Length: 263
Image (cartoon, rainbow, N blue to C red; front, side, top):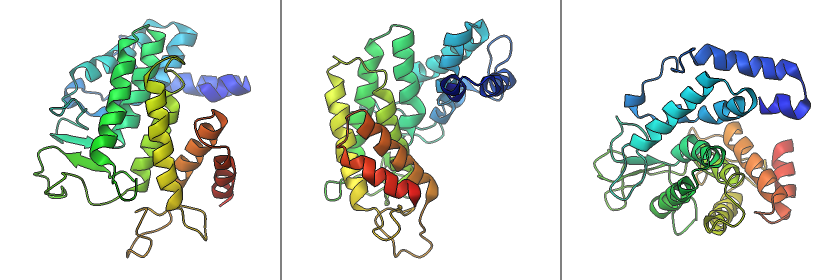
C-alpha cells in the first residue's frame, strides 16, 4: 500500500487492497485468526491495515484493527509487564515480538489519539533491553524466560544462549519505525534513540569484515552450520539507512549501509 502511494501507481494499491480483502471478512473478522491464541506475531499485519483504513474509511478494516488492538489489551504478560510471545510460550519475552506489536501500537496511538499508549511502547523496548542485553558485547539475546524452566534458558539469567541476527534485526527495525509516530516532544524519544544507538554500535562490531554481511549467529562465525544470513543483513541495512537519514544514527552509518547493501 505504501509503495503504491509513494510511486502513485494504482497497480500496487489494487494488489494491497486485494490482499486485505482476502483476509478481512465483511464483518471485520480476520480469516484464520484466533485472538485467544495470544500470538503476538498475528498483530504485525495491523501495520498494513492502518493506512488502508486511513485511505478508504472502510468499517471492516477498522473492525480488524480493533480486534488486533484488543489482543494487545489482553496479551498475557510477565510479572514486570512484558508481553508474552504467545500463550503457549508462557513467561517468555522474545526479541522479535517487539516488531510484531509495537509499531502497530505506536501508529494506532497516533491515528486514534490515545497518547497513553506511547508510554507502553517505550516501556516494552526498555524492558526487553533490560532483560536481553549482554553487558559485554552489547548484543541482545533472542529470548528471556522469566520462569527459567525452558530447556534453553540460562539458569541464572533466563536468557537463551545465542545472539540470533534476525531477532536483533526485528528489534532494530521496530525502533526506527516506532519513532515515526512518537511525538517530537515525547520524553521517550531520547530513550529509544539511545537504545537504537547502543544496539547498532554492537551490531556493527560483529559485521563480517570480509563480506560486510552478518552471520546467522552473530558472534560465532566459526560455528559449524553457521552462515552469512541475507535477511538479517537486509534488516540491519534498513535500520542503518533510516536511522542515519532521520538523524538517530551517525551519518557514517550511511556508508556502512551502502557497503552491506552492495554485499
